[in-house]
Image (cartoon, rainbow, N blue to C red; front, side, top):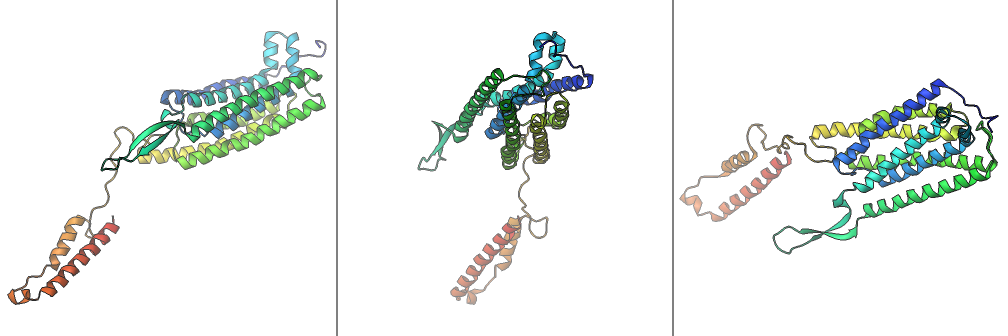
Length: 351
């Protein structure tokens, strides 16, 4: 093998790959720190994390299959040449690892008040109902546990199949010649990775849209990763032994993440206008909510005062003879009550 293994030195590819690996750590750090610092992973969709973890795992294994012949040459290289040779695999593996850490942090910092079902017990008196937490897992927490197991099973299964095929198939040091079985498996991994990446952001975009809050999502991370995703496509495309199945997932993810980023920026502006934080809580020192409009048609006069004046205008002074007409007074009182109700409804509608 040593006669055919020759390290290819490409300073542009090496510089691009090294910068991307460093950029991945820098871009994911704000998201990891945000979850730990806030002590909450609220705002994430478990489906987003499931699809993202399985998509990145498939992309990592696709890269390993596509460059397996080159990776095997490491046994004849020095440390630096070997590092340069497997830099593409390290780059994709780093992306998988850092995203999977988000899933782990999501499970660790899942909000405790959302883990179990809370039941409202009526006290049958004037007191408000009492809220009691049960031992029943909430639907979201149960779903998160199930999807975490799915991620683990998917990783173990795909890794097992990949290494079985690699160990039973011949490989070419150039990385361009593979067995038919490996070609099919690599294509399956690449296409499934792209499909999962496309589906990954759909539930998160829908979840964020319904929540109308940024939640635990990190805007700085997405600001770095969105353009970085397109650069990663270029970095993978120029590496030997790769094809479109190796980089299509990163292209789809970059486009979808850009859409999520735009939505989060929009909600962030809305939160600042409403003086609430990313989880919907009022900001410290935020002004109290504006009181409802309490002015009458003149603008400066309170509604209560306007209603009283209108009622006083209806009060009629009568003499002794008119007092004998009691039914008329009843009619007048009924008319005043109707007018009071009408005025109250009218002014109430203007609030």
